[in-house]
Amino acid sequence: MKLSDLELSPALRKDLSLVDFINTVASIINNGRYQLREVSTAPTHTGEQGEHLLFISGSVRRFYYWDDINLTWQYIEHNNSGLGQASIVASIALTAQGAAIGVTTLYTPAATGTYRVNVYHLVTTAGTGTLTTTIGFTDQEAAKTATPAGNIDLSVDQQAQTGQVFISAVAAAITYTVTIAGLAGSPKYSLFIVVERLT
Image (cartoon, rainbow, N blue to C red; front, side):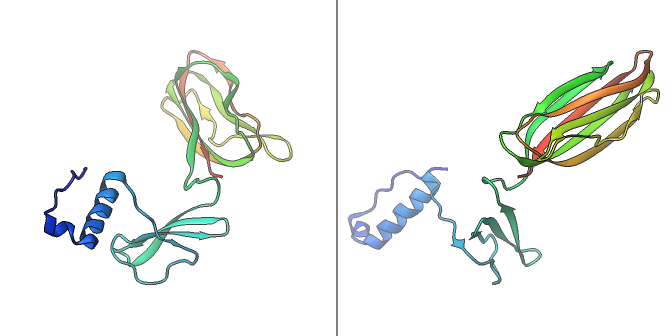
């Protein structure tokens, strides 16, 4: 939506307050200019439908909005580099896999942070073997591994397991590895992993 230039009559142009108001409204609509009210204390007053504001206190940043249905203030908070919620930094989707996978990098953080790694693996063609997906990372002390999703029996067609792990990782690769114990026949599996940065 964009407002076209208005041609006011000479009489209306004499009303400077009206001209300023029209110019301000046109600037907001055409240029997206909007000043969000900033406060340093959390709101406690009864808000109006659609009311929202920015709360800043120290390192805490919150976007408050009035929930007119439940008559309460709700907020979204971010405390680090503008991250208001988890952001996906890496993902893989592998299908029709029939063998183990060696250590493979998912994501390498630029600095220390906290992450959530989500794993989902499933059997698509039955065979023989037990499949394990392992996540590797390095925290502030040492290299570590975790297995978010339970092992799957490759002899059971359509068996699936899912899980997630919360980790603190330094600036070193976050990896995944797939091992298959007792592999025989021609089983196939799919593997899906999503890495989310939390802070």
